[in-house]
Length: 185
Image (cartoon, rainbow, N blue to C red):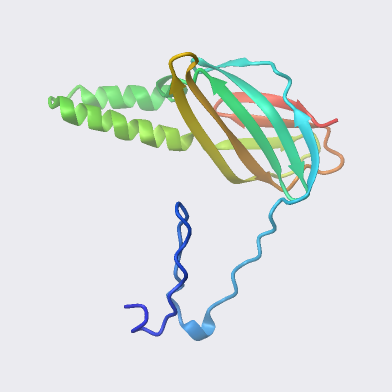
């Protein structure tokens, strides 16, 4: 269909990567914006090793990597946090709604969908510093696992742009209602 409309077919994306097709006037197709990737590692800050209580698990910062274009915070939670503790209002609202549902299959489906939605909300976190830099989230990843010995575990990272300014001495990372301070020097 795209060929019939005069559009070139894009190369197929690699597995696990989404692709978009520009559907405007081909003669007016804008150039894609240039996004600079954080390629030059400027500083690695090791985590303190201190773990704090975090919704049924223990949160710890593994390391912070400062690049020339971004800052990445690498974290882990063991055992993985309890999603229902992390979002008590949403959990209570769901349970109130489910009191009216008689079908057990439907109850489990609603709980599964709520868990997926709340897990998606875990991507939201904020970064600030003592120099007043305005950061924006530029990406994140989270993966969870379970095994007989360790139980549940989650780890991941979040990327913020821009990198800290030269005047910044401390970062403040806020995830859900927990704020951790990270010394830069």
